Image 1 (spheres, rainbow, N blue to C red):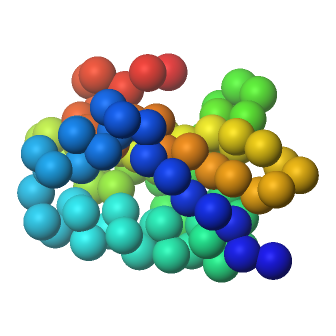
Image 2: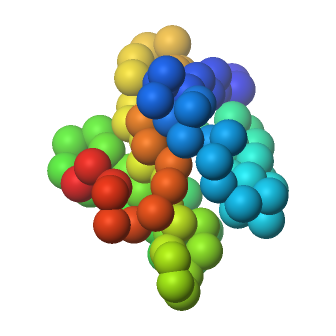
Image 3: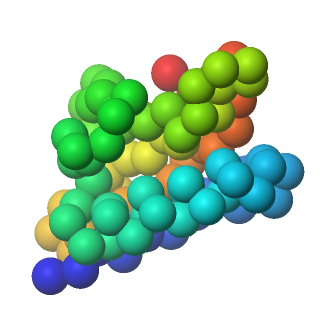
Length: 92
């Protein structure tokens, strides 16, 4: 069963501000989440945070870009992207 991936309002706004190269990596990440779920052990720089919170560094270096998502509803397979942007402002 496919997972539904949605953006929070703030993450959707932040997505528009990141570089195109990072957007492409984010789009690839979302494709993988839709296909196989929120746990992305096959992605480098991925880790599960507390509870249902996950994150992955999309681009390392200066600045480092990160995506943060959480499992919204396991029964109906919804994942919400809650942050996309630089590592310094990530909500974890």
